[in-house]
Structure formats: structure tokens, C-alpha cells
Length: 377
Image 1 (cartoon, rainbow, N blue to C red):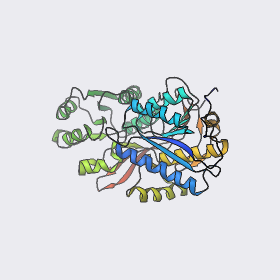
Image 2 (cartoon, one colour):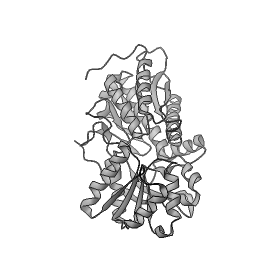
Image 3 (cartoon, rainbow, N blue to C red):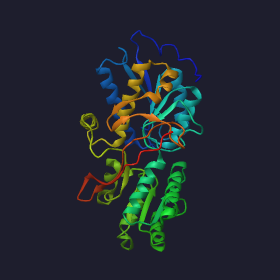
Image 4 (cartoon, rainbow, N blue to C red):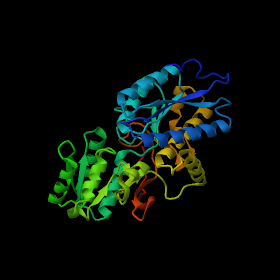
């Protein structure tokens, strides 16, 4: 594998820091709360690495850049971080942003461990430079579709905004549900106002409505309109992309925030490591950590292990993806090649369908667990 030479200083042994570039959405229109949780996990893991002696005696340092959910801004940040001499890239929550970052990282020969983005086609062509912790969208959303069928839903409406990510999700649901007797009714948010969505749901006899839209707009007004329509008292609202995971969802919707199933990437029970990290993250965030915070922590755990074993040379880091075997907060992390996925992929990410308990909105109920392991090549 050919790569540009590692910039001067990245391999030094003079006590200078080993730098990792962190891509995180910290301002609107990015999902700021997700970015804050992701950064909290990254920072906690960096602190623990340094408390344990760093990378061969050198401190590990995060160089953070705010992507603000902007693909062009993310690509420019990758260029800047590459020039600064970072050993690797970490992070990003939004799939379309991570895709832009992955393309630049691949072009520049800069290792990128993507924490949270799930879009299957993270790069157009197979790459050795990018690995990912989050499960691909096709796996998670098929598990969500299984949950829908098991709960008796065969007429499913999806209300979607224009986006590669939302279009991909709608396609996955449609292709998976159709052979199993399910019907997907697609509503374009450019055409339907939140109040008009209710009429379409009634006309089509939908029993479930999935929100393939951003938060808080237009997700919040849609939920409020549906919840207040007596004709739709029995309809299930779902949000496979995970909008209800964060406290902001409860703040925006109050009692309407509950009983909306979504995907979450946590095991049913945390390991001792996961439990310890959960406690530390809760203290850092002053609230319960989301699965995104655990993804951040696990990202640094993997990169630190690779840097300790192989040094800060970029090419050696990328070559090490298939040999990774790291205890993460959510299980043993190993990367493999999987059919249809262009990056090195953790094939055993835990997946749950959960919702917020109407009796106690801060408590999550596990409704369904994905137990299939991805096929590996």
C-alpha cells in the first residue's frame, strides 16, 4: 500500500504528543448533543490513555474540528489535519459528513476510524485507510424491520427529507419488507406539512409511521400532530435513526417523547469495563451517556492500541486494521471485510431496538435485540 510519508514530528521520540484529529458536530445544523456525547467519549479515553503512560511515553492529544454537519467543512478539516501531521482521524456522527471525510482521508493516505456514521457506502471504492465501529445501515435497519413485522406492522409509512442517508434507509426498509408482506408508503416532507401527514396516514391505513427526518425540525411538529389526532390513537411512531436517544428529545416533546422505538448500539448488559466507563461518562456529561459516547471511547481505545503496537506511521496504522483485537465497552472489537461494505468493519456491533418508558421517560425499554453477525469475507 503506497502512502505519502508521515509528516516530520509524527514519528518523533522527543516527548512531543501523538495527535489524533477528531471530527465532531458541535454547532448547528449539526446534531450538537450527539457531538457533545461523542467528544466526551473521545476525551475520556484520551485522558485514561495518558494516565496510563500515553503512547510509548508520549502524550496522546486530540485536535478537534467542528464539522457542523457540513460535508465540505469536514473535507477541509481533513486536509488541515493531514497538514498538521495527525497520526489518524477519529469520530464523526453524521453519515453524509463522514462519507466526505472518508473520501479525503482515503485520497490523502490518512487512517480514519469512523465512530458513529452508518451509511453502507462510506467510500465509493474499497479502501484500506478507513475502518468503522458503528454497524452499517443495512444491518441495523433490517433488524428494525424485523421488529416492525414482529410487532404486527405491515403497512408502514415513512416521512422523509431529501438526503442520501434517508433515501438509503427507505430503500433498505422497502426491499426487506416487501418480500415479507410489508408495504412502505413514502411521504416527502417537501410536499406534506406535519398536519397533512395525518390525513395521508389515515387514508393509507398505516399502522406505523417512521420519522426519517431531522430533529428538532421537522420531527417534533410531526410527532405532536400525530399524537393529537384522535384518528391515529393506535398508530406507532418510530425513529430508527435514534432521535429519541438524547435528552433534548424529552425536553422538546415531554410526554409525547415516549414509546417511539429507535435503534441503539449497546449490549443488554455492559461489561465491567463498560460499567466503569458509563460511570465516568455520566460524571463528565452530567447526564446518562448515550451509545454515541461509548462509540467515542471505543474509537480511542482501538487507536491507542494500534499506535502503541505499530507506532504513529500512517501506513502501518492502516495495515493494522485486520489484526485489531481490543476489548471495548460493548464487546471485543475486531475488523473484517464484509460483503457490500467498502471499509474495514466491526462485524459484531450490538444492536437493540428500544424506546422511552411512558411511565418513566428517562428509562429505556429493550423491545428487540439483533443477534445476527454480519457475513465476513
